[in-house]
Amino acid sequence: MNFLTQIDNIALIALLLVSGAALFLPTLSTLISGKGLTPTEATIWINRRKAYVLDLRSVEAFKLGHLPGAKHIISSELATGIEKMRLDRKNPVILVCDSGNHSRKGVAEVQKLGFSEVASLEGGVQGWQAAALPLVK
Image (cartoon, rainbow, N blue to C red):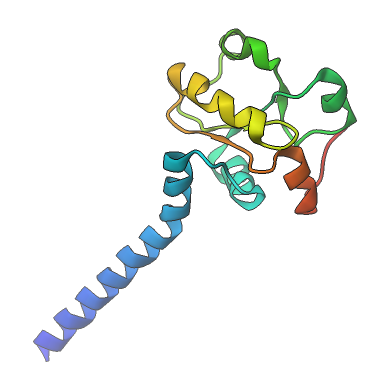
C-alpha cells in the first residue's frame, strides 16, 4: 500500500513538471529564436509580468492608436530614450512597430542595456489588430 502511494506521488510530480515545462517552453523558445511574442503572449507579459511596451513607430502613427500603456520612443534614439525613462531592468520589455520587422532589430540593443527579457511583438500593431485587441488613442 505504501509503495502505491509513492508511485502516485511520483506520477503527480512528473505531471506537474511536464505541465510547467509545457507552459514555459513557448516563451523560452520565443526568447531564444527572437521570432517575437504573439499578441496573446504579449498580453500575458503586460498583465501578469508588468512588461514595458515601447512603440517605435512615428509620432503620427502612435497618436492614431497604440497598445494600452505603450510609451513612444524614437527607434534611432532607443538607448538614450530608455535611459531617460529609467525603466526597471527586472521587468520584461516588448518592442512594437507596424509589422514586427523593425522592432525585432532593436531587441539586441535593448538587451545590451541590461534587460534580460526583451521581445518584439510578432506582426506588430497590425498583428495586434488582427487578433481583435484594442488600441488606445
